[in-house]
Image (tube, rainbow, N blue to C red; front, side, top):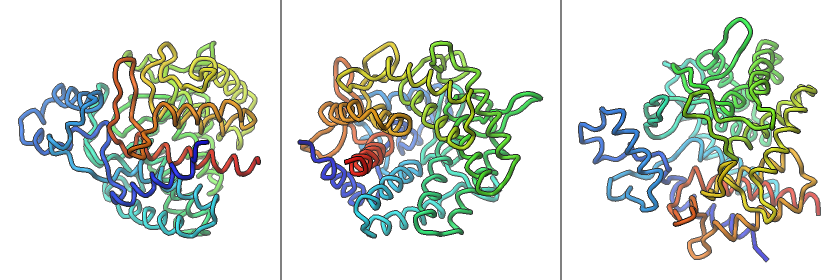
Length: 387
């Protein structure tokens, strides 16, 4: 029998031993060697170098002098996992660890003189085809997860000041990320770019709904409703969503679909809207048919088994726990498949990806280990509650 608590204890020990620092699939532009060359000024070179670091099964980061560092989103996920650990054990040790990380997040938000409100970004320059995000610039996804982690910690510790710190980011989202015309409102992924992806839009919609409800701010609630409606109207007849609106964003993958469904369900717990409920049912049916195999294997893309990815497994656990907790059988299969296919017992951690031809075992703290730690603790709590 798999000892999930032991697996997560080992993950936490590794986080602590490494001071919650690590590498990331997208951190190649932190290379001290790359930044000594003229290539650092070339968009194409930066894009190629970023993708090389992401896709290579050989970890070149030590050779290229890419240092380990803390990632705000990874830290937030670990805090959410620590809170689940506290719920399991009622041991203040986990809250003490979480408190230290929450304090670090508050101290390491993006420059408030520039952005006016609380927000967070990645610890690396991020070169995508659609945009470039300088190191430390805010984005909606990181800001969402950090804000959520701080809010959850404030709730469990009854800390009003931390609650205010968390909710302040909703004003950043509406001031710098909101895109609107006469009839529609949507959230952008990053400031100064109208690149649209559905999960980013829903992260903004959900967070502004949370903030609007707590602060009794009707404008926030209205913005959330309009952004949510846009993603619902963009859903295909089969229940799926493409990643985004750009020509090169037309793929359909599991963990972003899982994000969409999880967020829509959280939104609808507040709004109780029939149209949103119908969208969730259609999307969840598509998700289960196209991404979850009978043996619990979780696919990355709708039209391909590979790559198997730890993030996809973790999000599958969280999505099903959010929408269909009664489906205990498939949840257990997913967790067992996750461990058997993606866990390295000798190294006490998860691998990044497995393709048809090779395995990428690079240790990524945000993309892989932090997600696993959070989702497995969430699952352990669910099992304890239902047994």
